[in-house]
Amino acid sequence: MDIAIIGSGYVGLVAAAAFAEIGHNVICVDNDVTKVDALNRGETLIHERFLPELLARHRGDRLRFTSCVDDAVRSSSVIFIAVGTPSAESGDADLSLVENVACSIAQTINSHKIIVEKSTVPVCTSQWIRRVMLQNGAPREMFDVVCNPEFLREGTAVTDFLYPHRIVIGADCASAAETLRKVYTPLLDGSYAKLTKAIPQPDNAVVPTRLIVTSAESAEVIKHASNAFLAMKISFINAVANVCEAVGADVEEVCKGMGSDARIGSEFLKPGIGYGGSCFPKDLTAFRSVSYDSGYDFRLLDEVCRINEEQRFRFLRKVRQALWNLKGKRLAVLGLAYKGGTDDIRESPAIAMVKLLLKEKCEIVAYDPAATERAKEIFRDGEVQFSHDLYDTATDADALLILTDWEEFAGMDLTRLGKAMKNQIVIDGRNLYRPETMIESGFTYYSIGRRERVPRKVVRRLNTAA
Ligand code: UGA
Image (tube, rainbow, N blue to C red; front, side):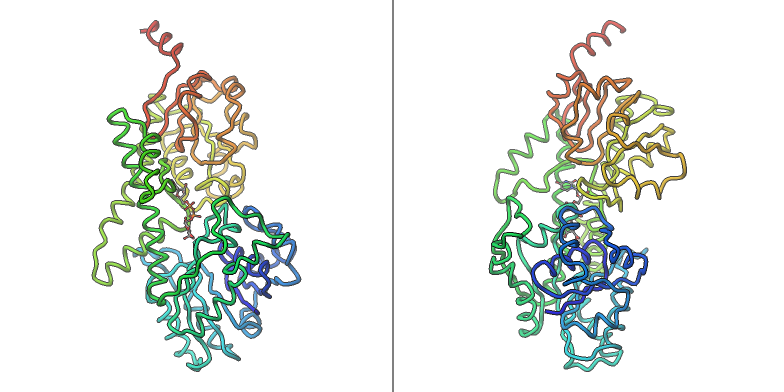
């Protein structure tokens, strides 16, 4: 099929590459000419596993990039809208980019088109898109609007897209739903996974995947409600972690016990310094706002956000508990991205932590395997020292803080680390280590939802000093 993707952000770019991978002709549009030029030159733009491979396979062949929406609209029968839907000041999603795209499509429409909402949008957006199309002169019989929410996660976006747990199509017209089903056929019949050159399946892949066809409104709510539920799970376990700390329980043991109940499940029960990223914070406020406007006061979502924000201040208290005065203390910070596997720093709790620590006048040396360049753009010159090597970061540090769950941070050479640091103190905001491992390596170890652990020789030294 001839497909247009409007928007080349994380969702748009991955969808474009993946649709080309499953056999479609794709034209991906972005009004940022620099981005389009970079994509045409062969750059990948984002740090995402398997994306470079897919772009190299299909760029210039089944996958083209342009800044001209009109060309893309004219040459495609299915048009995916994947532009940004940021938070407006009110908390509502700002849908002006979606509206602009709908206007452009209406003004260019030359044959029947299926317009697919791929961006995360509040319920009833498909009705608005339809209305805007009509107001801008598109004949009613020339288009259908479908909602096809995307559930990919950054870091595993390509495999999430090619091996999704479900495909949701929200359509009020059977023929449009059928066309969308055809778009996804290689994933729905399992034929893509059988190809020898297929991107490898992740362990928990559901092949073939299942199709869920709903009304457009239900599909829109499925997306917001799914993200809100996942965020709620994280805040729930963070709140439980706080209880664990207060009563001397171990949240990791609690997670194991809770998560093995299939009704609860073990995923998204990782406690830490809170969730971030371009989706959960924005989608929660948008869902809260659309619920309120429709007459339901969804206050549970306020509490989810409050617990999330509080995690940062609790973590700051841990740093104080470990170091007493913070002014002038040299802190090695591991992680700037909002989670491991991505270079994205939007709404990153790690960045928020660094900002809080800078306010306390700490000296920060930071290392992230992928997000450093992006992070450099948001700090003033010299405000933070950026390091390119994990162990250099730790040199002479008063404490080491783990703020992002990169795999590299979970497998550190603790002997080498300990030798580099001034004080062997690790404050782990992602629970990447077993406390026993840290103690055995001589570290005083603070983590989330578990007791502070101090090596015996340090306790002896402190007692002697007292
Ligand atoms: C999230 C959803 O997981 C996707 O299904 C959805 O498609 C996407 O938003 C979106 O709406 O576009 P993403 O933001 O890429 O995906 O990343 P997640 O893996 O969900 O992580 C979000 C945040 O929660 C990160 O800061 C992560 O560190 C944190 N998190 C996640 C926890 O603190 N604990 C957990 O157990 C899981």
